[in-house]
Structures are given as structure tokens and as C-alpha cells.
Image (cartoon, rainbow, N blue to C red; front, top):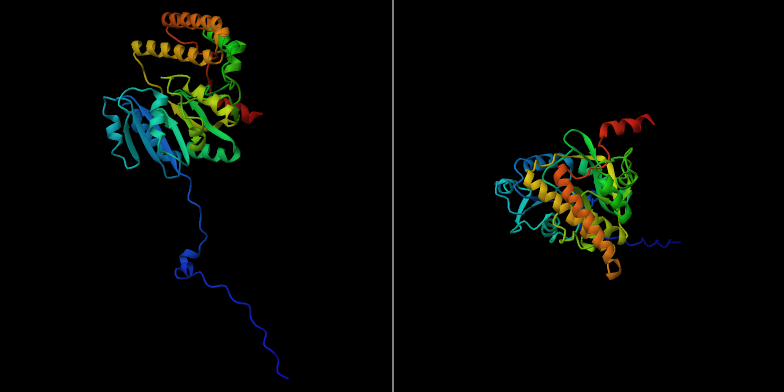
Length: 330
């Protein structure tokens, strides 16, 4: 008796797109998200070259740099534009720090953005360390590194959001009583640095997902300098994002040497921006006397700081290496 042959199931057609080239059979790996670095310049001198040179060792990812120039006269931005990764954007005037970053990033629609001062020097792997931290904090809207000065002192770059009570205590007591409780509370990293959320992070070096940056409207252009980072941190928080301090990533902020005239202007801008931020916390006619008192106190402090020659710095800086050593001994 003849046996009926069993029909074989139809074989799926070959994907000729891959079969023609064996190399294409390899598993496809998603391309990394784009990375854009924005740096604002105003006659930065040699700092900009140091910034760009150190950036090459800060990440293994491809990146592009947008130099937003606010009217430099030293030729440094033009020299930087000769580098293949650099795009030079002339803002047309000294429009301020936050506004220049907004202009630089207006056309960036996906991936990550890093905003920084030109006098920042990236430590090797620091930008990749910030990117790695973003995987641990999926609601992170801003990531900030440990910021050291040229002598290795740790700058308090992760802080609590200012409140009226905390701000008054810090403003009035920070310059003559460094260890006062208001300053210690405001500068929350007075101790062993640990990765975690803060109220706001220093705008001298920040990594942000483009989505978060644009969703909250970027920096507030009304802050010419100072407090634009405080305001950004507050708006990120209200929108449900976290500002995450990542002390395992390290950058050096050398700081420019300002003339006495420039230093006076910077103090004035600091107090003007402080008033703008704090007064917006208490709007309306019912809070007008409070705003008047706040304005009087800030302008008195500004005048005093001109005489003393400093803005209250709060508690003395700590060495990053000492803090890490103390963490190891625990």
C-alpha cells in the first residue's frame, strides 16, 4: 500500500537583504543618542582650547560642540571653529549665559545636551560617567558632576532650592559666620558627597536630556547671569524631573580672573538675580512689603560686599580627595 507523503510546511522566504551579505547577519545595534555640548564664550582666551582638548577624553561617544559667542574680541571662538566638531554661533551681543545656551540648543531636538562654562576642564571619562548615571535615574532631568577649583577644593555645586528663611540666613550670616545652620542647609553637600537628588545644580557644567530641557523652556532669559541654574532646577522639579548630583564624575572649574570693575558688576548681578528669584516666590500686592524688605537687605549686602571685597562664601571649601578618603574609611 502506498503511503501518502506528508506535506512539508512552507518554508519562510529568505531575507535576501541579509543573505546576500553575510556581514549583515550580525545583530544590529542601536545607534547611541546624539550628544551636543554647548559652551558660552566672552573672550575666553586659552580656556576654550583647554575645554575642547579635555572634552575629547571625557567621552567615547561622538559629539558636536556649539560655541555660542556673546561678543568675544580675542579671536578664541574663531580659532575653535577650525575644529571639525565645532560650530560657531555669534549671538550678536552679550545676551547673557542662559540666553546664549538657549540659542545654541534651539535646533537640537533629541539626545543629550551638556551646557558648560569655557573655563571648565573635563576629567577623563567624566561625561560618560554622567551618561551612565542617567540609566540609574530614569526621571533625571539634569545631572551635575563634582566641581573642583584649580586647587582641588570642592565647590558646593548641588544645593537645596532657596527659600526666604534659608536665603535670609545665608545672605546675612554666610560671610561672617560660615558654619551657620542656614548656609549649611543651603549648601547641602557639606559632608561626604553621595549620588542623589538635589534642589538645583551648578549651571557651570550640566548634562540634560533634550526632552527635559525644552519641555521646561530652557533657561529663563531674564537672568543675565546667576540664578538661571537655580530657576532651571526649580522648574525641572515642578515638571516632575530630578536634578541628580553625580560626584563620581569630576570637572575642574578654573575660574576667570576678573578685574575689580568686573567683580563689582558680578556682585551686583548676583544680588539682582537673587532678588528676581526670591521675589517671584512671593508675588502679589499682599507680599509687596516683604519684597521691599528683601530688596533693601540685598542691596545693603551688595554695598557691604563692595567694601569687604567678597560675596559671602559660606562654609570653607573641602578637598574632594579628603572627602573620598573619609568615605573609604567608613
